[in-house]
Image 1: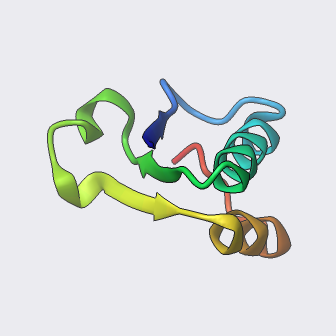
Image 2 (image 1 turned 90 degrees about the horizontal axis):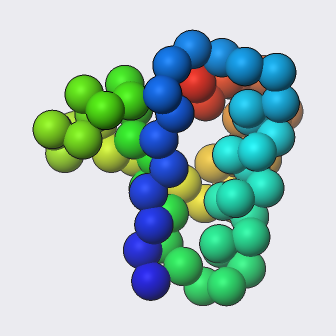
Length: 69
């Protein structure tokens, strides 16, 4: 199964934790996860899709990267 995650705006409290939990849960089930950059506009171009996995979300947590961009 393949799922995509998109946010509809800027950062919100707890947004990174929700994205991290969704990605880790999906990965534990063997699903492929794609992150859609730039919200709905990102759905129009494949260059706006980024693969997300355990390493992606855990590295972002350690470096303080925000997913809501």
